[in-house]
Image 1 (tube, each protein chain N blue to C red):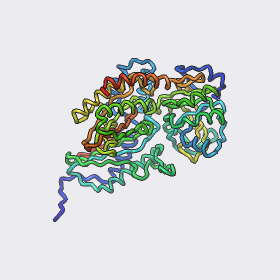
Image 2: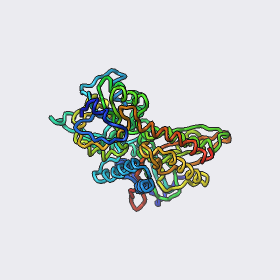
Image 3: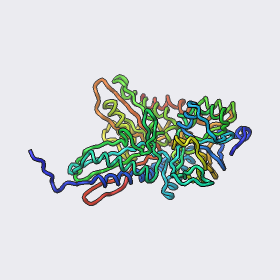
Image 4: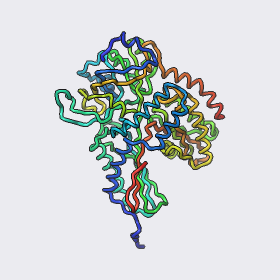
Length: 194
Length: 300
């Protein structure tokens, strides 16, 4: 990371991806402050991936390679659905290309990914102990007053494999599963006598 | 009238409660109970979808990594919930017990350290203590077991707790209305609640009791069965129904949507038919400490 629009457009739903180098952590409050309350970040997110998270951290003395003064205790992924309305502003204003989360995003995000060249990568929610082993350091932090919902910059190595849940061609694994579930609903209810 | 303090009472000091509360919060976040581990292997043996099988494998790997690295299973430290069962021959200062549980929770958060996942509901300010008004959530029950005090700790993550639903149905909606509500709640929750889940269903009672029962059902160990025969029947039917929907682990499709559906029932009013759903995610964490005259035993 970072990556280009062309890189993203090569990906299709169901592909698996492993990321290297840099990843930014965001959450509800991070985006409420960035987009509803007009705060700006000093980080350059252009072409980068963000993950829906709020980590468990331990405060340590800042050093040259650890300006944040935090080390990871446990970092995992939260439910993306609550942050649906921030996909487009993240991409348009900050240039974000990849959103990593769990549970999927909805149609507005699918359209933004298609129009602007972005994708959603699914990480296995709840598997945070494993995910933490893919993060080598917390390099920096911005909007620190929102801790743990700050904007985190993580150094990563072999982060994944992640599943392409939504691609830049309008594809969505979540929408496909949802349609299939809706189609099964009537038969399931009939069997229950409901 | 005189009050006699009998010598054969169990006394547990607030300090012991505080230590146990601290230990249980951290332990619950790190070690998954055996019934849940076995639940994963059972689901994996019947799962037919390839992607779902790889998702289950990652979850199983995570349990091993958490134990090996002594790390938290999930970053969501949850809302801390304590269920306290007080035997009939236990002498306890209830107020001191509540304070001790809160102190233990705060110490776990500061000393481990853990992420405080608790904020003021209006200002959204995080005190970084995992505590606040009415939190930790504490449920106290008095039980017949003599000279036994049991503390059960459940950290409840928000992904699954946000999949809670209550509907005050009416008698004319019948049992079919209840079943329909549960199926639709599972569909609405989809992959957001970190399936495979334990789907807790409360049937009957008042609105508050119904929601509480759904939570009790969601946090009951796998393999346990509803004490009410009709409720037990409903558990089997709903479990099969929910797992026929194809939501799958993480909502990415598959057979393994729920480890089980658990039902708890309460008597209700002639004009009422309440139903509630509460979801427990796949990281179905809990830990317990049981105080007896012989000492304290820590388990699940």
